[in-house]
Image (cartoon, rainbow, N blue to C red):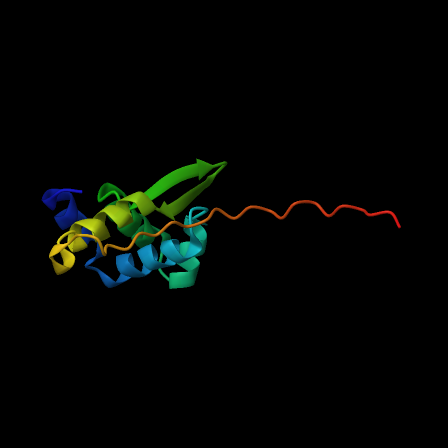
Length: 117
């Protein structure tokens, strides 16, 4: 991530609602959440949600995908790690202490096997 991208990302996060949306999506993981669920949980009108998620999307911090008639938003963990890496790349003068988030995708457990006695 370069300086320009970093400024855009930090600008997008410098709003209470957008920060809450981003944190919610980070907590949810790669599966993301439908727009309606985000609006409901944050108690904001759909039009306001659209404005805020588009700002985060233009900054490259979240992804958007359509599933049937729903828009699903998810945090872009590569972008988040790039932002954190840029902010910490000279940490302690070594650059070796930058954290990285590697979320796991929710996968259903394997089917139970019937064991015969």
